[in-house]
Image (tube, rainbow, N blue to C red; front, side):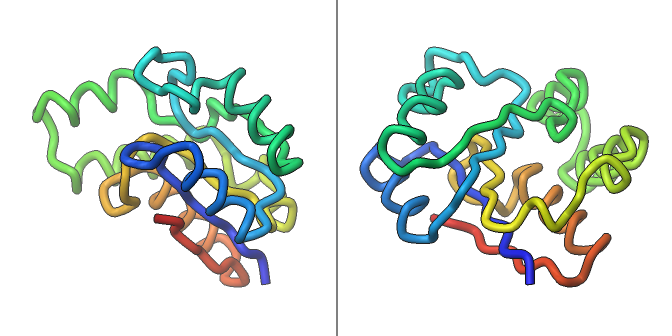
Length: 146
């Protein structure tokens, strides 16, 4: 069974965030954000997160833009030009277009944690991505860290 975690950093302080990763024995953070350098990200800015994860918990870090939505798609949803349901479909179509299921060895995702900013996974592409992997391989267990 492949354990695949997801986490959002919004509404979490660094202590809670890193404790969740450590207590669940995460071995790699996979950053699924388009932009991982925003000043609003605080401790979760790409280079800082990579450093803290390794130093505090010996967790590796990878920023994977193939897993991120396009800027245009995200903007259409945030502006209200498309519904969440339309966003979901367009994002899943994008994953197929990018051939993510063929490019990704799902077994290598064991104890990886998909990262985005949204506090909960309900309306976040990290949930859609995790479920996409689960659909490709039903041996994937999804655990949302909150």
